Amino acid sequence: MSGTADDSLAFQRNIVDILPQNWTVVSLTMDVDRGVLYVNRLRSNTMPLVVCLPLNRAQLREGDGDAGLDLGSVGEIVSGATSTTSPSNRQPVEMTKEAKTEWWSRRQNLNDRLRFLLSTMEDQWLCGLKGLIQSHNTPASEENLLDFKKTLEWIMSQASNTLPATPARNSRTVDRRHTDSEGASVVQTEINIDLCRAILNLGDQPTKSELCDLIYFLLDAYLFKNVAYSEEQFGRVATQIREALRCYWEAEVAANNNGYDEGAHIILVLDKHLQMFPWESCPVLRDEAVSRVPSIWFLRDRILQQRHLLSQSQHQDCPKPTNNTADESTTFVEEHYWRDLEVDGQKTFYLLNPGKDLRNTEEEFKDYVKAQPGWNGIIGRTPLDMECIQGLSKNDLYIYFGHSGGEQYIKPTQIRKLGHCAVSILLGCSSGLIRGSGEFDPTGNVMDYMLAGCPTVVANLWDVTDRDLDRFSKALFTLWGLDDSSGKGNKRASTNSSRNFRPRLSIVEAVKEAREECRLKYLVGAATVVYGIPCFLKTGS
Image (cartoon, rainbow, N blue to C red; front, side, top):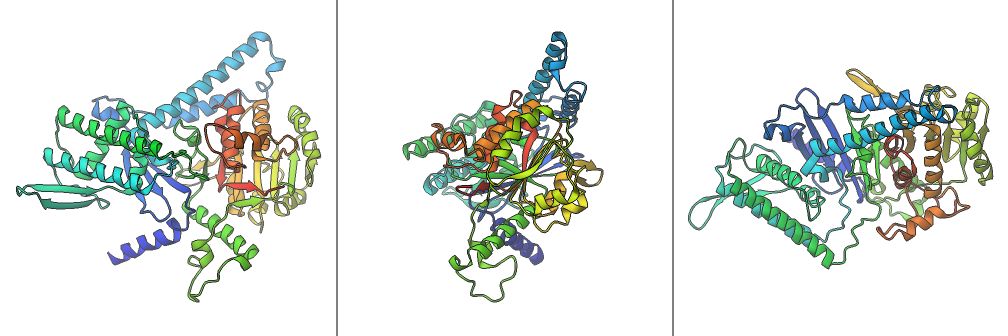
């Protein structure tokens, strides 16, 4: 037992508490055989929250025999996308008018199917618990948050006393029993503070299905199991929780809360069954800054790597540790100092149309890349291995405009051996695809970059059309600040009236906004994701 406790403390200290304060890590794991989704939510200085969600729980409650969403649905859409981006179908300008109309109709249909699938996935798999995968964008006052927590605990306590309860066998539930003034047994249940934050993400007007799903979860997970209850009792709990949400948000408005946590960022850790899903484009995440990592250990490595670099570059500004026994995971810098990753945009290497068959892309970007100060690279020819290696190892930023992820020009083993790997933007079809390997961990070109220590990789999960991708790329460069000739990115970020953006965007935020510039915002826009941690351009670069 003590070993388990020690392991938990070590995980909390070495993994959870080293996270920057404004990051939320969400690990999603699917048990295909049991049909359940495990959601593990991590925030610094907060106890991890682990939730098990049956995927077909709504159908079971309603007596519906439907198994729910099929995992193969995304694969079918991706296959359709690939078939319409094959060389014979890629250029609608060469088709007849009728063929072009049919081509666009197929693409639009696939786009709509993907949008509907992501919405259905959110409604069926997450529903009332969808706030678990969100950051808590509203910087709630501690007082308002604790008031909501106490109110929710009181509501569930009252529910336990009106219904025949069986004590829950949940290790994360603190079940406190005492007697009231009349000697009756009263159950008090402490609810995880991060679960309260997730519930608050539902807003002040949750839908009926979201509220019902939340109540079923709370009753089942925190109080009892296999207990029948009346519509009147259930309705009373629903009314009380809805009122608690309304009161909380009224208090936030009264406090003039701007509703945006500066630098809020979500990092997804997806298992092999879920990596193909473009979670970043789910309705609940589409307006959030979201990236993904292969595992929690990759994330820990990137955090320690960044803090090591900070300790080297700003050693004179950081207090030194006084404990000589501090090891790698407990140094002062690692535990107490963090600054976002920054790269010099003028130290950029580009590889534009090395296969010599993306003429439109070359025409679109050749003048642009040549005009950028400090940039160097290759246009319209096959690079040598050493040119790619030096481009990745001796620059801060690497941009690839070509097919796939460029693995045909530099071997995976060469990438993995790099001592330094630049932040990489791989603008090729399926450059970010991670392929399944049965019982083994999935593999893919993007993994080679991550294994080489690359802090951030922008890549595509499936095949996309070059024209829409070019539109996305131009928007990305402008929003992130690479296109310093126009300054549109900073202007857009600083004058948006709906959210109080910072003067500059991380590359993750820029990708999020650039998706909206695509003609097909899901079939093309959702394909592009970010692996790794958020990074910024250095001021003036």
